[in-house]
Structure formats: C-alpha cells, structure tokens
Amino acid sequence: MGALRICINTQTPLLQFSAPTDGTHPAWRIENDLSKLEAGVDYRFSPGGVTRMVYPLAQRLIANGVWKDVHWVSLNPNAPATVRLPGITLHNVAIGRERMGGYGNVKETIWTTVHGIDGPRLAQDLFWTEDYGEYTYYNRTTAELIGELDRQFDFDLFYIHDFQQLPIGHMLGTLKPKVFRWHIPFDAKRIPEQWRSLFTTYLKAYDVVIVSTDAYKSALQKFGHKGRIVRLYPFVDPSEFREPSVEDVERTAEAKAIAPEDVVALVVARMDPAKGQDKAIQALARLAPRYPHLKLVLAGNGSFSGSSGGLGLSKSGRWRALLEATAVELGVRDRVVLTGHVTQEELDGLYARSAFTILPSTFEGFGLVVVESWLHRRPALVTDRAGIAELIRDGENGLLFDPDDPSSLARQMRHVLSMRGDLVRRLTTAGFATARECSLDAAARAEARLIGRAVEA
Image 1 (tube, rainbow, N blue to C red):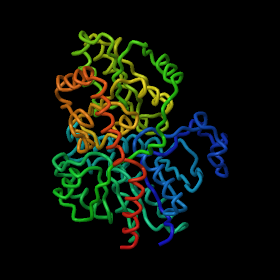
Image 2 (tube, rainbow, N blue to C red; image 1 turned 180 degrees about the vertical axis):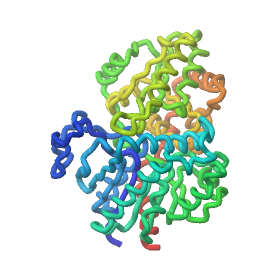
Image 3 (tube, rainbow, N blue to C red; image 1 turned 30 degrees about the vertical axis):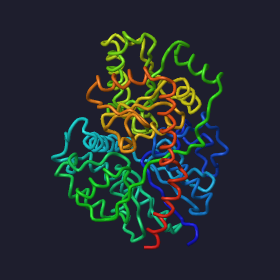
Image 4 (cartoon, rainbow, N blue to C red; image 1 turned 120 degrees about the vertical axis):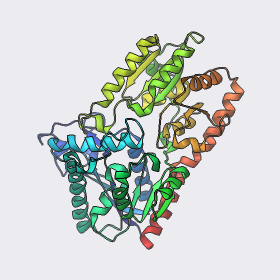
C-alpha cells in the first residue's frame, strides 16, 4: 500500500493569525506559504493537546512515507482560506459572527455536561433550539468543504477529531473510511437520555472510534456502540522538550515574579473550571503556614474557544477572576502567580524551576501535562479523575489524589515536599519510563497500523 491521502478535521485550528481581516496583510494572499510569514508576529500555534498531537503525527507519517498530500480543515474565522505548509494544506472554515454564538453555546453545553460541571442545563431540548441549528450549520459547512476537497484530491481516509465535529462523519455522505478520535472523557452516565439516540447515530458513521483510555473504551461499549473501538494513549513528541539554560530559567523566573527562595508547585492548564486550579489554591492555603516559601504558579490562558480570534467565549476571564478572588479570600494572593499565556521557552523554564507539578482537574480526558512533567523529570501529583490516572502507580511514578478533597491534595503536596532526593529521583525515573507509552514514536506506529487497516477493510 502506497502513501495515503488524508483529510484531517479539527475544530481548533493549527494556527491563529494576528493579521487584520481586511485582506491587505500578506497572510491573506493565497499564494503565500507559511515560510513567508513571521512566527509570533503574523501567527502563533494554537495551544492545547489536540493540535500538539495532530501536527507532529502528520509530520512524522509524512516523513515516513505513510501519508502524503495532507489537508487539514478547521474552524478559523480570522484567517486566510488556505495556508500551505510543507506536506500539509490548512483550510480554514469561517462562519458569520452572528452564528458563532449559537454554535459556541451548544459546544459548551455538551462539554460541560460531559465533564459534569454544570449539569445538563439544556438536555431536555438542546437539539430543538436555534443554537443547535447554528451548531449543525457549522458542521454542515465543514462537511461540504471536505466534500469539495475530496472531489479535488480523492482522499483515502477522513480523520475527524473531537466531540465538536462528531456529526461530520454522518454528513459526509461517502463510503470512504472515516476515523473519529474522541479526546474528552467518556462516561455513559453523563450522556443525557435525550442525547443518546443522536450520539449513537453519529458514532455509527465511523469505521473506527479512538478513545484515550481502556476505561473510556469500556464505557463506550456499555453505551451500546457496536463498531470498532480502539484505545490509543494521547502522546507528545519528546524531541520538543529541552533542558533550558540556567540563564533562561532565571530570566523566566524573574519575569514571572518567582524569587530564588521560592519552592514552586506548577499547574499547567488553560483557564477553565474543569481544570481545578481552585483546588490547588485551597491546598496551598492549608500548607502556607508550614511552608512559607511555597508558591503556586498557574501557567496558561484561555483556549481557542475563548480567544478573540476563535469563538470569543469569555469563560477564561471569568475563571481567572474567580481564582484571584479565591486566593485573596484564603489569604494567599501573594503566593499565587497567574502567568497567562506562556511561550514554549517560558514553559520549559517553569518546569525546570518547579519542585513538582499538579494536575488538579475535576474531570480530565487524559492529561498530557503529566507526560510533559515526566519528560522534564519532575514529580507529578495527579487527580484520580484524569484519564492518565490509568497509567499511574501511586507512589511509584506519580502521586494520586481526590480533587474533591483539598486535604487529599495538600497531603500529597506535603508528602513530596518532605521526600529525600533519592525518593524524588525514583519517582521521576519511573515517570520518565512511563512517558514512553505516550510518545510520538509509539503513536506513529500504532496510528499507521490502524489507519492502514481501516483503508484496506
């Protein structure tokens, strides 16, 4: 079997552009490729696990001769219609601002319901609302663009990512193989009864459904999905992680108000209630009197959905304000640093400066930041609600805690703070070894086999 033509579809775009939308900037000239634009000025890579996974995977499989002529379709209203990278062409979907709000409301309702944050507020009649019409309009617009591209480039397979795009496979109207990757948690008990029939119909349109853990695979089977389900762990590219210089670490620490004597507990996550940063602040408050130099660093900003170039949802700003108010109320505002967006270089510096990391999410699809922590050889304290908890052997390669119990996290923080150097090294060495299960090399081999089988079936 020769190299395959693949169409990738995600909601979050690979790139976000800072150029004005009036078409006068060079970024809006279709003949220009990305090499003619300046990173950090004209564009930046979107934050988040999906794009950090999908792009390296595509690059690797193109380099290995498994894929060729890859086309990637995403929602990106503040972008040129087409952007060309080596081996990959990005196609950006734009829908009117008057439609974005309705689409965003439905997306957020599904997301918060599946994560158990606000409960199924609109579960009774979500699919009968005007907002759902906008959600359907976005997916139909995307499916029509993918169909047009298929007529031009004759794809061998469609690779659809995450819950926002779930209807796409059903809408494509082709018998060509379709693979869907579900990136968020899957718990059948959290899917309202009124949604089950439609979810089941959408899932049936795919030849393969990929989930992130064995627990999600079991849950999807119990949900009643009869098609092929494959568990593939999410992954990162270890080559992206470098050991920063002492000067770089000191520069980042100074910029983020981290003093030389501070003992840093690091949380890397977007500003979102599901990420549980408030739990980390509560645990810090319990330990603050005993550990006067302990400082909590919350690194991250909003997601694509919350950005001005994305859906424009404001939840990240509201959540940041609530976290600041919580820190003030608990008397630890001077012990909490909210960094906002950080570059990869700054993030490397924060990992190097940290004593340990925390993943405090109330519910987490997987938790690639734990893998990042392992690759930086830092002890990881992990919520037992994260998908990656499936890989944690408590006390061997990580420390587990209950995110609903601040004393549980405080206890594990106190534990790691009291560890001797040899125990910390044992914890981080085991974590570094576990990270191999979530590496780009392992994923590229597994995905090449999976997609090859789907095409040959």
